[in-house]
Structure formats: C-alpha cells, structure tokens
Length: 226
Image (cartoon, rainbow, N blue to C red; front, side):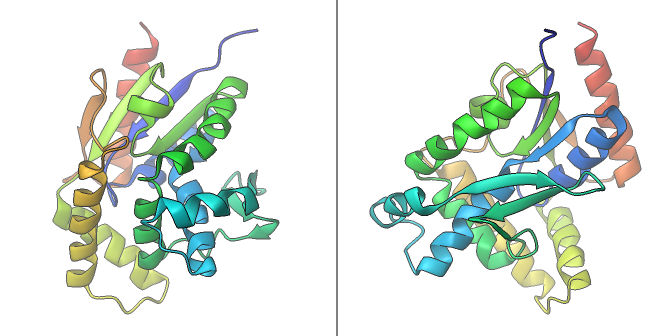
C-alpha cells in the first residue's frame, strides 16, 4: 500500500492556518484535520464542567468522560462531535480559545489526542494544522509549513471573522487576546509553539488567501518532488 502523504501547518493563532489548510485540502484532494478544534472541544467540556483549565488535577479526570469524533459534512468541512453533540459552532469563541490554550499545556490532554491524530495520518493523505504538528504530532511529515503574520494583521483577521458572527468584541480586545495566546503557546513547557527545524516559514502579512494558497502550493510541490 502506498505510504500516505502528510502536510503539517503550524503557526500562531489568527495566522489563517485553518482557512489555508482547507483550501489546500480541497485543491489537492487531501483530508483536512483541524487539531485546534480538538483542543477547543476539550476546552468546551472543561468549561461546562466548571473545572480550572490550568489544573491537571481537575482536567485529567474529565478525559475519561469525553468522546470526540470527527465527521465531515457534504461539502467536506470538518465537524466536531462531543459525546454525540455537534459542537462545531460552539467552540469558535474567544473564551474557548483561552480554555483550549490552557488544556493543551497539560501533557495528559496531548497524549489523549495524539493517537487519534497520528492514526488519521496513517489512513489518509492529510493536511493537519495546529501549533505543534511538525514538531510533535507528525515529525516525519513530508511537508512542514510554519504560517505566520504580524500580530496586528492576525488580530484584524480574527476581529473581522468574529464581527461577521455577531460578536461585539473590539479590535483592541482581540489583539490583546492574540498577544496573550502567543505568549502562552510559546512559553509553555509542553510542546511550545516553534517552527520545526525543517519547516518552511510562510509570512502572509501582505497576502490575501489566493496569494497565500499559491505560495503554499509552490512549497508543497517543491517538497513532494524530492
């Protein structure tokens, strides 16, 4: 059986990882896996449980009560199921972002999801995005892209996305959260945010999605020819 190809896209919050990864998956016919949505789903359960997301003592016992399933709708978009409930639309809030960042720093949470993530890469050609895909989850990925952009640009993108969903959050609040999330993700002891040594950095500060897609596909074509 032909070995499956894995593409890893890492980078900070608001860099456009999910948007770009979905576009690449559609163009290349790969399966898209949003690992951040998995942590968000756990974060939602922790929030609902009233537990402290920074406390391993409170979070780890909850894991045995969590069943996460990934499904795909007719358009191929990933949907997140938490104990049988579709929570796709509930996990895209600023509060859940902070909960996801907190629980992702707990080693037992990362181990809980690791086998699922790696298992998908063994069964399918995948493009997987998150904050430690190329360094921890798929260290042998054929292609690794570290996607980034200036904090103000990432905040502007996130603010626009939230506003379209009816959020009244200000740009200044979103920028503050972006900077806080960057600090938390880069400074954590477990799997900190950083480019893999063999990753190609793609800075999309001055790019729209079409330009970013072209640049990413050029990287993928170059890397997969080797």
